[in-house]
Image (cartoon, rainbow, N blue to C red; front, side, top):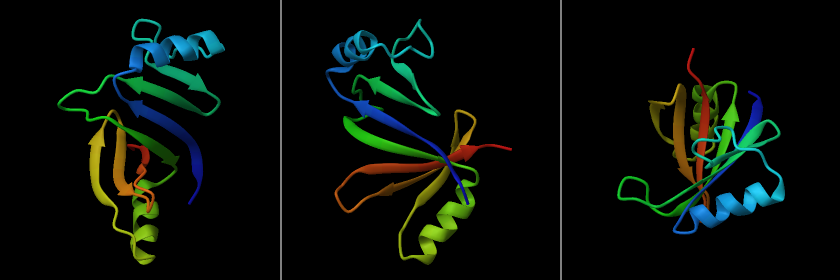
Length: 110
């Protein structure tokens, strides 16, 4: 079990101003056409506008070598990861931390 990186995702009404902020800070967009995902070391920062399909909130995405193994480990420690869902070339499990922070555990599909 190995953590490969983390990603931060914010979904809210300020996504355009946040994108401008990250650009002004010197972060480079992964896809300059969309300007909503910025490179950050081994991970990235995403900022999106809230929609009906994507409700407002903040999410910590933990990228791991094997999401199934991490989910099994979480269950063995009385946590309740939901999923998996396969999307965007990744296997994804969802959890909520005691603080209410939304968290995903995800790994690349084989």
